[in-house]
Length: 134
Ligand SMILES: [Cu+2]
Image (cartoon, rainbow, N blue to C red; front, side, top):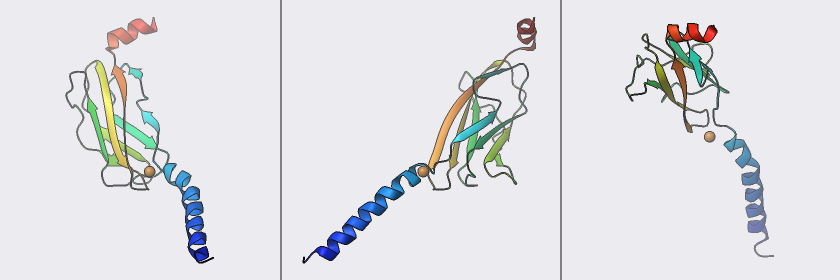
């Protein structure tokens, strides 16, 4: 009976930690939408790359880079966060020649965890786009 109080406290802590873990794990921001869409083919160069998360992300530590197939960065390095929709970040693009591009992103979730990811899109030449349509 000496340690009854300690035992109750430890038990309470275990219950609290068990209840909290799933909540913490599910609080990461998740990419839910992009423009252009992941793995899409475009017949013209996109003027902007936009991505959306399932929750608002922090204004600090956000990054978005577009890399061509030779590994060269081609975006304007001007990532911004939308003023009204804090789950939306975007960067503007120069005119891109036909190639497959990789978008790499990094944001900080509301729970302060850093989330990174990547997806690709392809710009096909207008000639090829016309051929595909026929
Ligand atoms: Cu997290």
